Structure formats: structure tokens, C-alpha cells
Length: 430
Image (tube, rainbow, N blue to C red; front, side, top):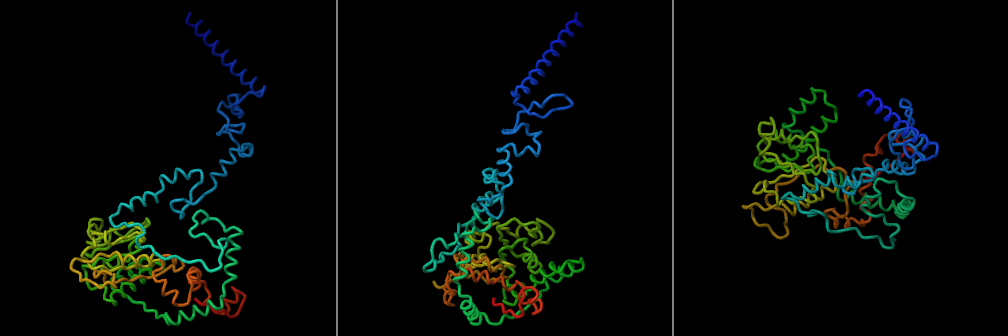
């Protein structure tokens, strides 16, 4: 009886399977099959998975040659390939289809929120208050939008290119050159190169040299030694109780070098970006790890534009010495404002006249400048000086761009210049 019952059940299942198979065949032949058209040879049937919209196949079996069949798939693939600047920070790009999700989890958003919670954060406290004025007779069509982050990664349009060309054509470069050379001779003159050395970098230099370090690594150590040597020459290293503030610190290697001389001093490392290989834990104490650096090192992850020294409790009642190695142009302007306007007066400090705004706790600063081309007129600290030399605000961006000419190879020998430019004699002005 049981054997007969199992046989009957098996026959029923086989009959049901045949009916489903026949229904699929009839649907296919009658163009009613709405599932994937991929034939599974091993099972002698078609795939049961739903099709991708606009295609005859499911996502698993969609061939590359069939991608053109689906217009929706084409649009999706085009969207996935296109990258757009992040609206929070245009320095990186994201896929357009993932933009809404990215904004919620972007590290820059988290960093900005964390920065705003710092006691020494004051929004735009060091930004400039002046702005450039449009030239007389200029039209809106010829003005390039400032800070257009949306198009930062795109090539300029034909209209934008024409606007740039019109600006260049309108410039009298011969007159501009004369004014630049006159201002340079009057305000700068001859620059003397004075490369100093300091004992606090000697051991590190020898260790790196024996280890076969590259010229680039050794050059950085030499630069650090020269900066510290100039600081000592300017009598900025006389007080070991001072707080040494490194602006645009990066890894903090300048502070690490100085810590060989003053291991127990306070070092404040200010930088807005994440940095790998930080030297913070080797600064101060016995230079053996995090424990020795807790009381002697403060890492302030903040944009100098928003830095308010008055809220930094760690430097109160301490002499302050600021320093930096490779601080870009606009960051230098912001740093000067931060020092001049936000440094708190020490409790025992003397009252200063109303004309002097710098705190008496400020001992001095040493900055190695770089990246002059990123200076911004809105944040430039001395616009009256610039205009007094006969320049217009509209020419500021042009002059900052021209500062890069000093590294463009125009100082090569005549034969090399002829080979590169096709001309014999070239006089380049900076």
C-alpha cells in the first residue's frame, strides 16, 4: 500500500512538472514568457529570474552586447561612470548616483562638525573684510564667477575661454612689467640667501644619511635646521617655557626637530587635514611614545581661518612662538591675523597702546613661505600697500599667478632656452 501511494505521489509531481514546463514552452512560443530568456542547458529550461527593465535577460545573464538594448541600463551605467565634485569639499569627487548618500557620510562633514565643537573655533574670525572691485567698464559676461566649485573639475566653456582671452588682450604687459620691476627694486631689492645649521638636527641628519636617505629627505632636514637656526638668531629660543605653535604642521617634523632642544616645552600642532605618519607621539618627554607626549603636544585639527587663540586654554600665560615650514600664501595671511587679533593677553602682561593689537605674550614667528599663487585678495593682509605700489585690486590674481614663473625653467642656459622655446634670448621677470 505504501509503495503504491508513493508511486502515485511521484506520478502527480511528474505530471505537475510537465505541465509547468509545457506552460513555459507555450508562453515562450506565444511571446508571453516574461522571465529571463537565458537557456540553462544543463536543466534544459530558461532562467526563472525576472528580466532587467528593457532587456530580455536578468541581471545575472545580461551580456555586454545586450547592454545597448536597455535604455534604462545605459542611463544607469552613464550615471555610475560620471563623477562630480563633492558639494561639501570640492577637493574630491564622488559618483553622481551616490551623491545624496555620500553627503551624509562624508568625512569632511564629520570633520567640520568636530571642528565647530572646539573651544578655539570662531567661524571666519581670520577672514579678510575687503573685496576686489570690478574694473570700470567691465561687464558681467566677462567676469568669471569666483569660487565656482561646481565647474572646478570641468574644462572652461567656449564663453569662459573667450572671456579669459578678452582679459589678456586688454592687459598692457609692457606697462605691467615696468611697474612690477619698479616695485621689486623699491621694496625688495637683492635677496641674500643665508642657510644656517643647528645642532638639534645634526643627529637626525646623520642617521638618515647613513641609512641612504634620498636628497629630498635630507633637504627637508636641512630646511628645518635653517629655520631653527634663524629662530635662534632672532632670539626666539631663549625661553624653554614658551609654547611653540606650528602652523600648517602636517606631520609635525619641525616641532620634532625643535623638541630635541626643548623636550619639555608645549608644542601646538595646527593643521586642518588628516596626516599619516605624524610625529606627535615622539615629541616631548623621553621621546618613546604616547605617554611622554600627552602633556607636551596638542594636535589642533582646525582651519586657520577659524582659529581663535583666545579659546586655547593650553597657551594661556605662556610666551608664544609661532613657526611654520611651507605655509601657503592665504594660510600665511590668515595666520598673521590670528596672531595679531586673537592671541590672549597674559595675566601679568602690560597694557599696550590702542595702536598695537598684538598680545605681549607673543614673542615672534618664523614662516617659510610657499604657494604664493594661492593668495586671495579678499584675505590679503595689506591691500593698501599693494595699491600704493601702483597696482589695482583686479591685478592681484594676475601677479600671484606670475610668481610661479620663477620655477618654470626660464633661468636655463641660452642653448637650453632656445631648444625649449625656439628663441635665443629671453628675459623673464618675476
